[in-house]
Image (cartoon, rainbow, N blue to C red; front, side, top):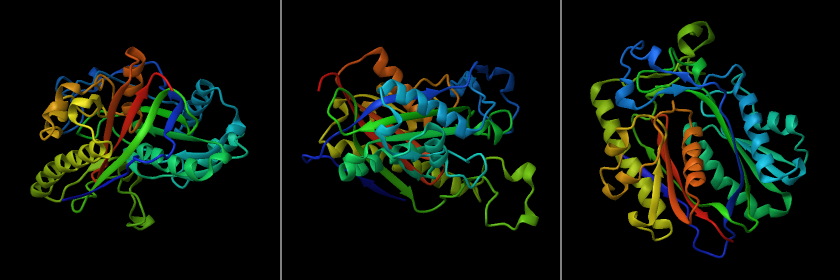
Length: 341
């Protein structure tokens, strides 16, 4: 059902760390209670644990730029310090064919920066960390890497929900460097991909249908569409397998055990879901540290929860952060917080 791929850091290769981290959560919080049950098939808020969402009045590129500005400020960087901009939009860009990295580069005056855009759903921001490390190891003299992920899902669902959980809008940005220092360090990336039933979650609009066949009112909305109940059951089983494969790969990359991990973070897609996902890693069940009150914001909420954990308890520790990408993949990263160089 799956094929796991992991990267390891067991050599003298410089360790990549997050120099700065920034967020854009377009406030104020919007309570979800008035919208509960308005979508067919939606799960109860009590079951999910979700309480509020965020709704942006600007597009996802604007959210990305706001988060990027916060990350640069927190890192103490100037525009010429950035050698590469990687954007990883969770769903769509404002006009579908945009390269948000180019917009971030232009608007922020990052004149030295190269650009790259990833379209890999919620795990794109994780994969971006791996690519950032490769860039830094190959071209450190070109500058640090700015990674940005943004999600504006509320324009793509009705009542913030597509039947499985509630969505929100937001963005995260990080400045990544190979320069030594304390703080959060990226240690490994892993992913595990489905070999069947990989296209069940979709926005139907694309090049598979002629323009004349498009119903814009329906085909720009997120939906989950399994062709039969067996496919859905196979996917649920496969999701457990893929999640477990990512965890195993990340732990193996540094010869860690479950006891070595201080916390594991999932996106806010239901507080009961991690118990199923961790069926093969019982030692991690009590270490789930996600704040499920938030609506899901693509790859944003996972890093928000990790950031909150480190702010509230700054200690030397290992962390796992994981997410699915549509119904195609699970991916994740191994992070280590170091309070001294």
